[in-house]
Image (cartoon, rainbow, N blue to C red; front, side, top):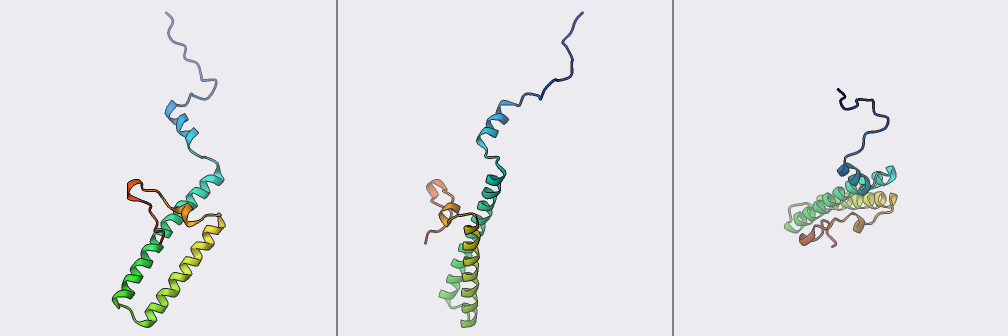
Length: 112
């Protein structure tokens, strides 16, 4: 009585079709992965920076801050914006590059 042959595999096991298709769509170049990760992190930082700026302007408009606090806040926001510009230039990115299209909701980052 002969059964199915049970021999050691002579080569790598075939990849499932889904995994192979995904690998073809994903960019796996280390430089590209690093740049895309950096881009995502900068997108989050830029979103938080814009939210902080809007909150600061709201507080200034409401008169919640002293003149010294307004000046310190303005200086801090200017330094943060400059740091963001420096980081974006490191990877030759613009704010538009960091923006994410949310479909019918518009874009993630403010263009004001």
